[in-house]
Length: 235
Image: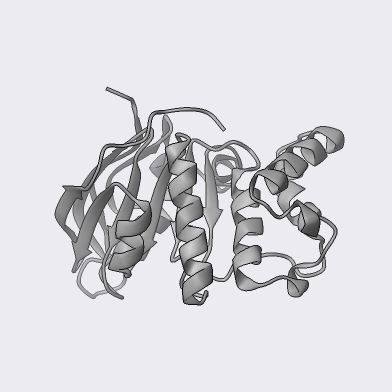
């Protein structure tokens, strides 16, 4: 059995005086899995994502990702963790409009200390693999939504993270572009990339993941495997 990439144990998080955003949630995701966290707005799925990404801390419980106790990290440690252990894909891409496609993609590697020439080679390899190398010198504003999301995927993969986090990755795309991105995530998982997709969209969950975890009112209510996980590999 493969090692866990994500291990949440009895994690709870409450904001102000309202009900808990997350209540005693436990979750294990192993290498090679593609898991969807599925729930409506306010269900707790965004809180779960923020805890895994090191953007927030639980009130109780532990969060371990790729061997790192994320809940124990300070600000500097959290930043290093996000650069080295996870890649993030956002609904609205979060690309820098004044940088070229290549410069957007190499940014995480440069921040992590990778040499410029090595970073450029890695970016070129990713852009070619994702079918957008012809846009290497273009600016994000010149690209379609689907192309921008492919750039975001390349950026997320730049530092070869053990875990890829995707927050509503097709939410800002039309149907055709959304299908394209969900197919891309499916292909990445088939190559061994561990992926966690946070979404309210059941169709997306079914199309690109092999396990669905439902969350409602801060509690995990269902955990169903839909197909066998991909074999582990390193991109």
